[in-house]
Image (cartoon, rainbow, N blue to C red; front, side, top):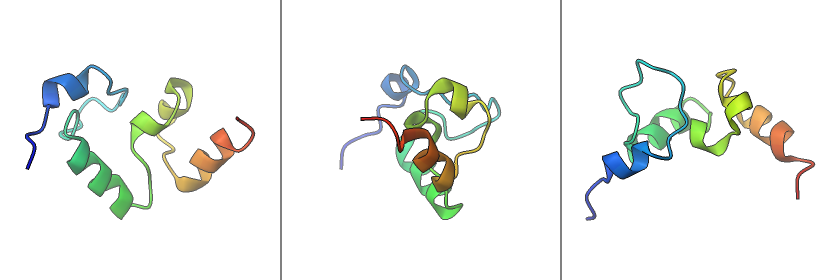
Length: 67
């Protein structure tokens, strides 16, 4: 199994939730959010991510008109 590249992941992680213990640990982040029926911050533009609405509905609303 490949080792987590937490330091490298942090360079592209746009999560603005400061006390998050999963920053840079993408596999844990994805599992956590999926259990909550959400998607991780990295799948949202920064302005949408800052609302902390990471719902599937918000994801679809954000990208439905984009090509």
